[in-house]
Image 1 (cartoon, rainbow, N blue to C red):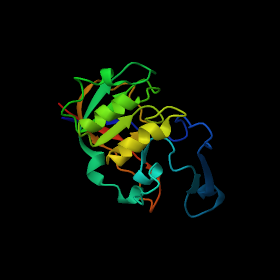
Image 2 (cartoon, one colour; image 1 turned 45 degrees about the vertical axis):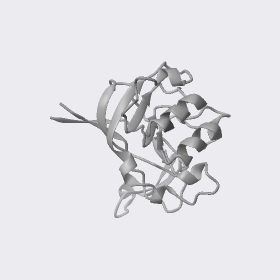
Image 3 (cartoon, rainbow, N blue to C red; image 1 turned 135 degrees about the horizontal axis):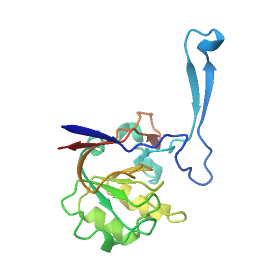
Image 4 (tube, rainbow, N blue to C red; image 1 turned 90 degrees about the vertical axis):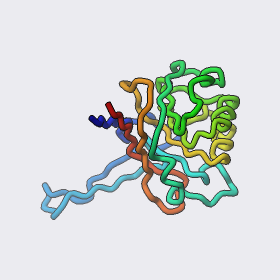
Length: 196
């Protein structure tokens, strides 16, 4: 039996990165007012809710937008690993737990950010993708130091998932980003597939 676990945050309820505007959904066509269909206007940043980062998000010499990211990075075998809640994630928290992992899903209670040494260790393991339940892989004021080496090494990043009821273990990740030409990021519908 296959179980689908939705790890996507509702965009209107997701934590908002400091300085970002909240998502607004405006009804521009309303059947209750006689319009032929219901249509909404969505106003949001490219990194709203559960989203993926493109290489050009932190690499000034890259022209790889979200529409050109390799799709295999967002689909395939992954491992959910729980680390200390709302704490910095060091190398020691990952050693012996992520070897042989293709896509790493970090369960940190929503506030765990990678330290430089952990980032280097993830890259050394040949991991394709890092998914985190924090709004970013790097802490405020330390974004570039964490994002840049991961993106430079070719990893895909998915941020701001919700893992409250997810147990550690092996799953299949499906988290394709919207295809927005040249954009630095895009929302995703992230799902973990569990097979019994």
